[in-house]
Amino acid sequence: MWNNIYNWLDERLGLNDMYTNLLDRPEPKTTWWNTLGSASMFLFIMQGITGIFLTVYYTPSPDHAYDSVQYIMEGVAFGWLIRGIHHWGATLMVILVFVHMLRVYYTASFKYPRELTWLIGIGLFLTTLGMGFTGYLLPWNQKAFWATTVGTQIAGTVPFLGEFILKSLRGGPELSALTLQRFFSAHIWIIPAILVALMGVHLYLIIKHGESHFPTKED
Amino acid sequence: MSGSHEISRRDFIKVTTGIVGGLIGAVIGLPAVYYLIDPALQEGGKDSWIPIGKFEDMQIGVPYPFSFTRVQVNGWERTASSFGGYAIRKSDSPEDLLILNSRCTHLACTVNWSAEASGFLCPCHDAKFSIEGAVLDGPPPRALDIYEEHRITDDGLIEIFFKES
Ligand code: HEM
Ligand code: FES
Image (cartoon, rainbow over all chains, first blue to last red; front, side, top):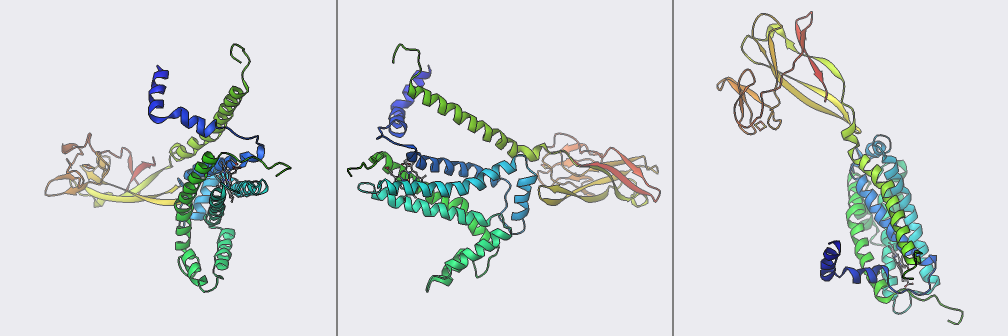
């Protein structure tokens, strides 16, 4: 019976094709270095899940942000675990994405026909950094506050546009409730949406072109 | 491969991936569920005696309104919740008091005494309760709740026993 249900679904959804293309496609001889993209993706999904759980208690307002994070750490069962995974996962993700980028560079995998995969990868790296930058402010403790003060101040040194950029990032001339709220919005909606879209194209291109051969001594 | 009992390399990878994935899922998933329902598992608050008014101020047969607030710690915040009710004095004896909770038994709006209607009216779905708290009209499934225990202090204050849920 399960077979029949499966066949019915397969005929309409193309499950077998999907399986072959996603998980069983031909690969050149690969190494552990080729797993870093998937590892980045796994971490992104982890960050997504733990992040959603954090929003159950976290409150993005200057009055409550700090206390709500304190509560997650000490008041809620396993809050320390959920926040811990999100906290360390964030750092690990930046590292992994960067090492993935280095490996693509060292194996020259960015060349024809994978230039777009590379360019989109740069977008992925920048958005990953953006996640880290916006997430860092959310606990609203001293470190977060001053790191964001400094970070946005640096953005403010851009010639001509600097002041405008600074004010847009902060939602005004100084760090305020508006800053916290817009960083929160960027952190949970805007940047993840961009990240997911870029990841979709990135993965499509990888499936389309297949994994590159590592260059040999002759190359 | 076919006919051999040895498990192929591919199948081994599939099974291992499934098991490791399942383990990771369980290790994260179970705490995550606990994390979500944790506030629902917290023990209820403390009990206390709450003064609602002087016995001599209550007139026989006229519902005497009272209200009080309790501060509860919810998460990282102290939240004040309001409660209220009506004390209905029936005779000279302080024992002879009916103390109704003004929380409607339908969907928890607050009922008000109306002298014209000579009943408690609920603004939400037009319920009407008698002075004894019995349902006269509308959707409530049962009579108004009663504060069962009360006592009178030496200064003539009526206090009710209140237990936080
Ligand atoms: C959120 C971040 C990223 C995710 C989730 C991701 C995901 C992946 C995955 C799953 C693969 C296939 C497996 C592999 O080769 O490791 C891949 C390949 C690739 N990635 Fe990324 N990636 C990310 C960031 C980047 C960055 C920052 C760059 C470079 C600027 C980049 C450039 C490439 C290229 C050119 C390939 C093709 C490699 C080949 O065919 O050998 N990616 N990516
Ligand atoms: S809540 Fe009182 S009638 Fe519905």
